[in-house]
Length: 111
Image (tube, rainbow, N blue to C red):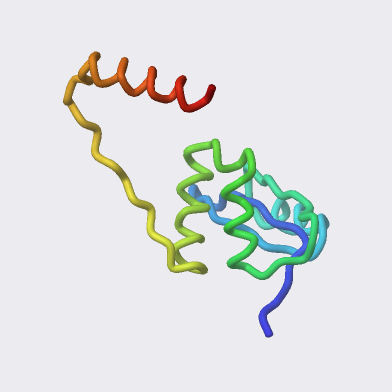
């Protein structure tokens, strides 16, 4: 049986951001006492194991911060075996006629 956690988030220690797991908000004091900065912990709606916590963190506002996002993605890979797929940017110019035709088709379908 894996451990369940009621609190989770991120913190920075020696310049490295990591996902943190805890059972209550007193963990903030312990992290601060040990030199952590940028401590962003939140209470979870229900107790979760680490893989579920990491999946949940991807749906929070923490994930909007690029530094936190990288830490959450690293934890996701560690606990869920996920990999982030990056799509290469295309330099191709959109064909306006195709865009217009698709927009008209979508409008017709919506009606």
